[in-house]
Image (cartoon, rainbow, N blue to C red):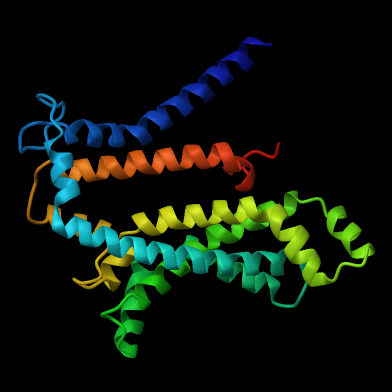
Length: 269
């Protein structure tokens, strides 16, 4: 290996390390400030205390907001799995006029700012008198997370050996039997992985939720935003640290059992 190649390799991995440090440093600061014993969010912390975790878990607004987040997360991620999986099957198996337009519409939520989506659903909810319930929130989250489910299921379909379906059809299986007994079981990890990603994105969605939630239906990120408008203690760092930790654990476990790298097309092995 030449000297120039070694230098490029060193520069590349140095850049990767710097990017990773840059991306993870805010999370490290949040976790560090969450254990500060004083009422100031100081970094580095002056000591160690878990008092703010206790307050984060017992604060009434956070408890109610977490319940609302679970309702929205369950509905939006489940509906997104059904809808996104259907779109993935349609795009993967059929060639039809307007397919490109459909794909563009499916991926558009990934490039449209979330505040635009939230404001649009705010206007829609006001027009339909739906601003006081969960319907508009679920619709907004559904629009935002469906592309991720579609992507996960589409990649899973691409990794499925089509010979299984052909063999079943040659043996007399009907199209519905092939779908429910062969194809869906094979892509089920992708569907579960898509649901999990949609659930995490829905649980942590803030920008769009800020426009469409009311005081009775505010989600956890919105409750956190309202909290820091009035208080500046490490409670917000504690609940943020809990979200970071729980999300990290869930993704590690899911990657171990479902192979999220393969599902998302990161690893083709």
